[in-house]
Amino acid sequence: MSAEATCAICGRTILAGEHEHGFAEGGTQRPVCELCVVRAEKLGWRPAGEPEPEVPEQGHEGRRRLAGLLGRRNRRPGDPAVLQPSEAPAPPPRRRSAPLPDRDAPSPFERAVARFNSSEAGRTVSGLTRSLGKPFASVGAAAGAPDEVRITVAWELSWYQWGIDIGDELRPVFELDKGREIDQLDAAARQWNATVGEDGRLGLAGDPASKR
Image: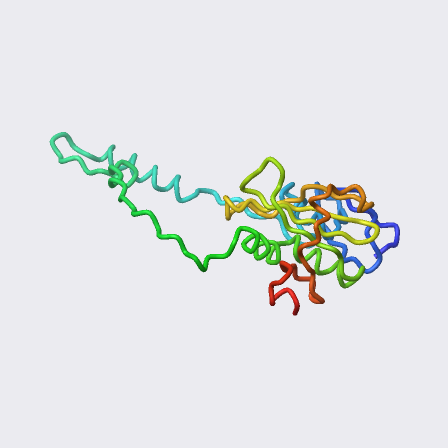
């Protein structure tokens, strides 16, 4: 990797020892840093060397509609009506009883940390920890968003923040902000109540798993 390589997404100089990801966009090869891999995928960029996806000629929905049209066309006057799958009435919804609270269920912060460690952002922190050493870390509620948890990871010359929507399990971990000076962070973000292990995994302070 060239020492002068810059990320095509955020424009940041890719650090020595940091893994550079190659992507193709419009026939052009573009370098992407570890922090921006997810953003490159959302933009529709393909990893370098991956072939163009094939577009199917006719999907399952098109075949189902065609079968319905042929069925109505071949029906003779007087024949009993036969409902196609798309025409059948939906069954009434079942009532569900409210679930009982689980006292052993993980807290929102624990759920957020688990999702972070299994995300692309978690793998990025793991890689940067091997290159830059163990960082400071904090886990707290995002201002103005009761269902979001904010995770801050900071080294001496750079810091990053990510958000986790605990109300939507399908929403991926997303980047909130980044900078170079720790003094740029607000006081709540500098409450270092989390740790990053030698393997780069985030853990809450006092959690035995965070000391591994």
